[in-house]
Amino acid sequence: MKNFYLENYGCQMNKADSNSLINSLMQEGFIQTEDYQNADNIIINTCSVRAHAEERVFSKVKLFNAERKKNKKNTKLIIMGCMAQTSKNILENLGVDKIFDVYNETNILDYMKDEEVFIKKFNDNYIFNKSYVDKDKPHKAFLPISHGCNNWCSYCIVPHTRGKMVSRKSSEIIEEVKRLIESGAKEITLLGQNVNSYGLDIENEISFTDLLYLIDKTIDKTVGNNKIWIRFLTSHPKDFDKDLADAIWNLRSVGKHIHLPFQSGSNRILKLMNRKYDKEEYIKKISYLREYADDFPISTDIIVGYADETEEEYKETLDLLKEIGFEDAYLYKYSEREGSIAYKKKVKYDEKVGSERLRELVDFQRVLAQKLLNKQVGKRSEIMIDDTAKDNIHYQCRSKENRLILVKKEKELNMGDIYDCEITEIKNHTLIGEII
Ligand code: 5AD
Ligand code: SF4
Image (cartoon, rainbow, N blue to C red; front, top):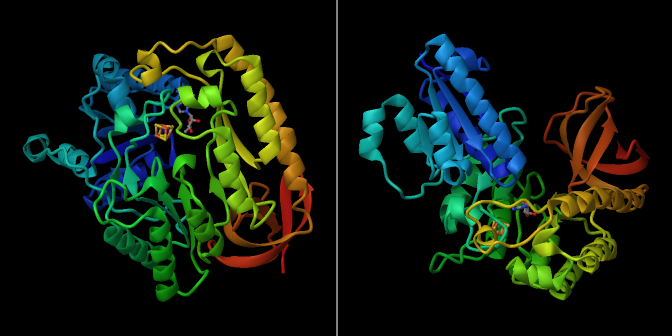
């Protein structure tokens, strides 16, 4: 029986693809191994959003290549994910066997089973893979609802690597939701590069907001209200509206949290980034949620140092962080991606300035987030048991608002169960709660 070794880099979408591939390979009789030196197949699911992840992949490819030469094993070295597009030539030169530039599980399976059959069956049509519950946390599942992106943010490589947005049929999504529920999923995260432009590419397809209503109804009919939580990633501010905010707030199964990247507090930079909204619109859209709850948790992504961002423009980003208050923010300095619009247009940036601003931003945001977290002490929330905490005396949980909360492990509780909880204190920057 053949085995395979798989390494995953990057976003939740990659994780979901890897998880799905692992399940399909095992169903085909392949065995997963942690021992790459004796693997028949080595698969690397790659990410090119930042240079650091790419460099790690290059060094791994070199290592695996040296290893398979030394072992004289006929190991297949397979690359999938974004670097298949961005670094095809380099990877080919490094001597990998096969690069799957359009991720398609069937193709990879066919290739691993029989190369000739694979070549015959190869087709470019995008097929959504079946989703599976997470291998390590089987109460969680990730469900891709769209693939690719039409937004063409100038700094970003994704539209070039993943292609135009393709939405999955809503009927298929509902079938997947039902299947995942049957497999034991208690939290389903809908995935897409831009989830809230879901359906716009298909005539007569429902909108993302309507999809949330439909999924909520399906959950209610199958297992009853609030037994299963729905989350979604990533939303784009340009497609966020009052209807979506109302759905998030009113639907019982939907987590009360949103990840809404604003990228920059400067309107000049936003325009150059081709983000299609300005600071004022972003603030207005956030207010739809904050009118429901003034502590409605929002997380975001920020890039500093793009397009020779001035000190003044960078300060506008700091001001926006302060004005809105994000409990979580993913902070980046601009990293030039070969093939992106910014690369072609030779958009200017200063690496050193980016690094300095990023360092300062991290500290700035940490203080803001801590202040927001402090305000949660004494509040109540529903939580889902996620895991045993590292200290082994707590359970690690997520509130419906996606806040990380630890609760004392007084008796055995099931992962994926939902309880009411009161937040009692903060220890080492982490919320501690008690089940009530
Ligand atoms: N440089 C820095 N950050 C980037 N991101 C995407 N492309 C780049 C880039 N070229 C960040 C954005 C995006 C997140 C997933 O990664 O903030 O929202
Ligand atoms: Fe990249 Fe923009 Fe698409 Fe996100 S929305 S994947 S940042 S092009």
